[in-house]
Image (tube, rainbow, N blue to C red):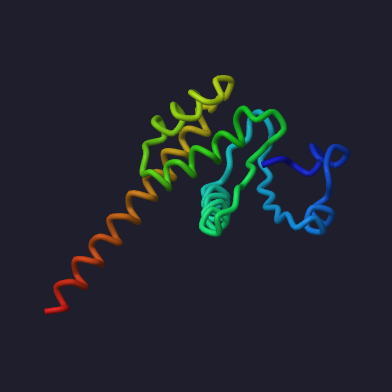
Length: 135
């Protein structure tokens, strides 16, 4: 979730991480006022789910670990557990009490949640339709 200027002098480059066997996904979001795009939330969640399915851990971070990374983790929890944005943020807050999801970030989480619900409804409808054609 960091922007390039935030990590230029602080950590390994993508090439250096790759040499160490670490795959990195950068989803730049402006610090303090930035709101991740719906597409970036989806990319980030799919990245986490991919490595989770392989039995691996994923480290999600931004510079302070208060807003941008917490927003991404909330999106993952929404996808994984079908939680509401409020439930996801509450769960994260119990573990990291200093997180701060800004109003715009909460709105994109609500949009992400609506997308998840819409997709689930489509999948359920397709399943029911498919089952009717089995007979």
